[in-house]
Length: 283
Image (cartoon, rainbow, N blue to C red):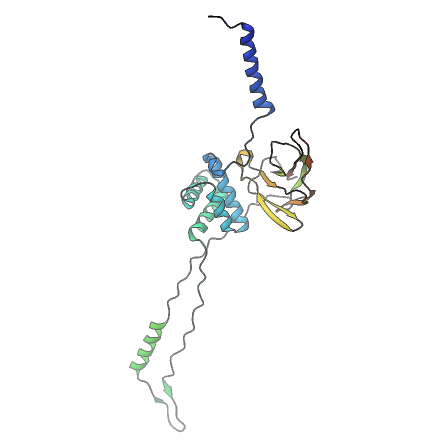
């Protein structure tokens, strides 16, 4: 059998090394828009925490329920309660309160508003007076007792609704944020018109659950950091429509990024819509 020469062997090794270098360094795989149900258990916990923080800020129960359905839990209330217990055990009291409040709201659903209590007419006066005569009783004690019993029997029983839990206050995050970075991005591997937002604190740690407000001529929307923990706790994104100018600001107060229109980029396959990357940080 003919033996393979050393030159061919080294050529194969070189080709394998170049392929790995290109795949890992120059063009690594980026996971974009992964479904929450595919996340690891710890990332799912972070996802639920961000949903709970968003619910505490907006009170939108239907939106929170729709987001929780993406996680794929068999019982969202049970999953939230179990996570709240784990967070309390690890000392995350504030976040645990938000998660528990969302679980309680989901369990109770929409609060029932009971009708006002009907007024009850007082029983008739037992005595009447005639001109020139003393007061003459017209009803016996037995009749008065019977009338009172009938009124009590016909009075409806009013059930008090269980009060809904109050939203816990959000932690004070300090001074408003500054816009420390704004750059256009032309990358054909990313979705067209992708707006990427990164929110950091003063120590450059990423902050989850931060509400971002985006407006345009005929509308507005909001989105939150931390819903894609595989890309970072302080990361959030939004798809920009072509030929529309947007304005972006943090809900807690920040510098405003204005005039954001998806740029037109060129590639070997033709033109495509680029995006932007914004970075907000506490001073």
